[in-house]
Image 1 (cartoon, rainbow, N blue to C red):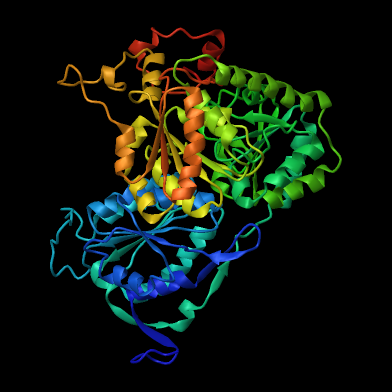
Image 2: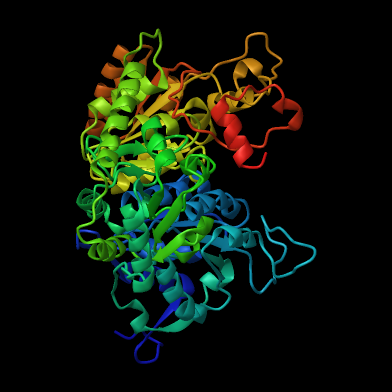
Length: 621
């Protein structure tokens, strides 16, 4: 079809119209081979800078491309990140904002997506390219650079950045946008800054730009020489350990990784992003690794002579600031991103997780590990399970975090999805959760962004077929709660369990455990002019945001409240919030150490045990 006034084979459209038409033409293939829209929806807050250009174009296709109204730009960006993770990066949320503060509010969400290697498409409005009306409302004017706008702040947290200053630039940049968003190595946030005058300018776009395209995530095979070398290192090992990260999840290689471990008798651990890839009761499952993991996995890591780390960048919480492994460790990495594979002096095998494991298995043939080492995984995990059981069964007046996680775990179904982000709950959820092997967990403990727990849950609830439950503390709730209303208004149900512990409990723990005095974390240690300061009524607040609300003060009460909330969320098609008073200082300890900057004058107050003293000496401090 040729539009009136256009040349043959072209469509005369505004920049914004062409962009929306392109979004609609992009398709994606899921892990199970189904074809779905690559861009299933748009999160939008309109203002000057996007309401007329892009907003008008989106309205023209409102029945084909759903637009969801958000209430903070950061929240919308986090919802898009949660959506991407819940679809294993096979579908991508689009977020648009106005210029100035609306755009800058997205930068934190871009950081979350960048650190977590999650694809989101950010379309912040921008100031006029023609500069005729400058300075416009909400425009920052850098004195040193007339070409700069606040959107240049996205450069540090975008995998790909472009500012569209002519309509025809879309022809060159949109293929790059699709490449980055669907590439397993480069995956991350893409930012297209859209000046408001350019959004409305017309151009004769070729119709080929709008032809349907199905994006299939590639599976690059690793270099055969690297595989041969890695196989030799594994054959020579006596106590190898397999570490599964988020790349295994996004490759859809979970079952292949487990089959690889079974064939060769290698104990398996998981990182934060790889959590729930392995059934908890599997005899090779040693548990999750690191600070927020389990003593069982950390014990095996300390004894391992070779670690095969698949699809992970081995963050400090996973490696206990590199103290959880033996000094004689040989590290082999299998990663789609060469940037991550070469870290820490590893023998790097660059390629897709599933393809790489197939190639390794072909070279290892019938090689197997000593059965005594293989059996140690189940032995260590049984001890860890007994420890967690004792924490869950402890007699307490109000619930501990371990008991909150235990209740949610007991009442969840295999296809449900559980989430958290910041504070102390990641350690409780990662270390204490017992999964069935379904990919059913999202712990944003990479950027550790407070507020992701609710906004990310909104996005996940759109994407995941099972019920989503998110766990968060009172601090995160107060930081970014408006998306409870976003989800309630839109009709996306999930359950939020809010643990009220009177402040930023986990940071207070860090502050005091490293020799600091209680200060500005718990409310009791914060400055106020009131003898009896006010408290937040979280139940009434959540109810005012359109949620169904339940409260609990005991483990039994929490069990009843959570069971009822699950049913209510689905029946009423809106979030259900469970508010539970929680012990502020009862933690699940994984027996690992973490590097933080401690002032020298405080170091003398600390009493290290022998193991920690050895770790400090090893790190040169």
